[in-house]
Image (cartoon, rainbow, N blue to C red; front, side):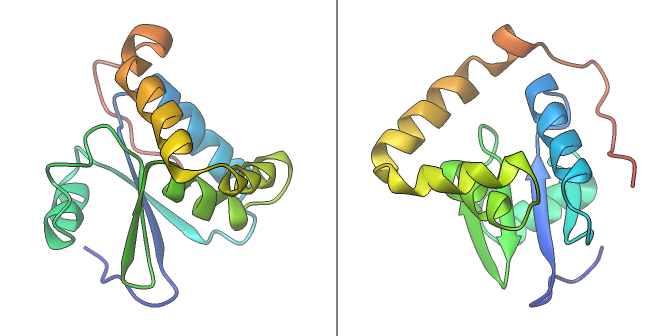
Length: 129
């Protein structure tokens, strides 16, 4: 497993979730400088990072971003990821204008129903670089 450095940005995502898989595709397409390492939470590396940052209990329904030795969850992670992307996904950074409670309430509602709304894969596929 790669050590998290000041320059590393790691996105930990639910590899079985079709919505998350779509988000990973968006990140991959709009990250021309390859700033993000993408890791499925079901992977050994994902579980080790969640344990290292004491996120094992809170990360199952959240995308996680680890950068500069700090972890971001839910809408904070989405906003921080969007800041580094190019193209239309960069617009998601403007969600920071909304109160955090409202942002996370919307995020949690979608996360709670993501399998029913978007489906689920039987096998977690790691993103192609």
